[in-house]
Length: 436
Image (cartoon, one colour):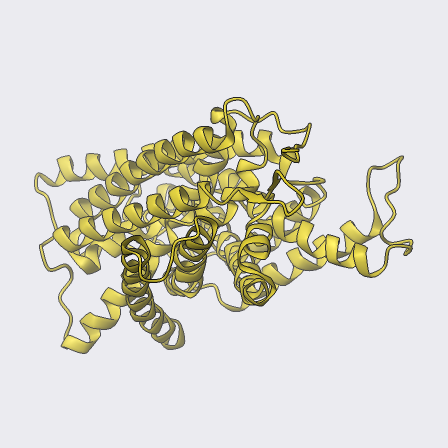
């Protein structure tokens, strides 16, 4: 007897999958890409973005083949999360390592999104100050209050039961990401027209020494890596889809479209930002104040950023919440903390764990509010295992491809090359964070 373990709640379509992926991809990474382009130069910057987009496409294509795993009794299991897929396909030993990496990935996303949202909230205050007091005014505001405001909002939203209940949040967040990407690109283009020239160079910003240039390039690569992070949520998104047409078909269509759209916006924001400011390109396109006017449009873009990150934070946090709560539920099945209160659709476990997690990311953001350096470290620390290593190994195991078959050799060479690039990016980004 052949069967597939189905979930009746799977009603997602290509459009909801698009919303989830766009929300996951067009995030904080897009704001630092103009700075990355300025460090790498026109040719290397463009090729680096296209290369990471290609790596992401390969990754999601491999993962699409790993959603359903054979069941020993016949039929298939649906792997509802990235960790489920690793556990069923690669076994327990790989699951331990993957679990550590995946949890670090979710946590660093939460920290970086908290930092970025606080900078955007502060930028709104500064933008208004510069407009009314003049561009040379001392308009400085503490990020700490903005970080705490974002944290309070997340404590409330963290009580959303599970990933499937975030569809509406993803649709709003994806709309916001298009909004600020359009505005950022438009402001950059307007600045280029105002300047009457395209700034920038093939080699990027010159450095006083060759080693300084190497470190800045490595950090820029880490920033670009952070801009392509959707693979970890691939299984969760796929698990929301209707089985007709097959999830694999729907997801390949949605992911390919999303990566192409995201890459287009990344190139526009990075390219127009660098063309507008050249060697003076700010670390964050919307909060670095290359743009002062129209102040209301800068404010609107930053509002879009904050709303998007509010939603994206939850999209990335829900799988982590589910993992922790399932573990606690299995360990203490009879505990009063685990039992839901029907009248409030709330249980003490959810309230305690999720509030503690938000408090942790908020506290860490208060201690290390350095945008580009944190983004670079965040992008490089988990990119290779999540985006490359596990998808490659799961695909080879799922398809029973031997170690010396040509496809296996090609994929493992591909994996090794990306590992070398990411180690380079990680070292440079850590150095930048320590100096800051």
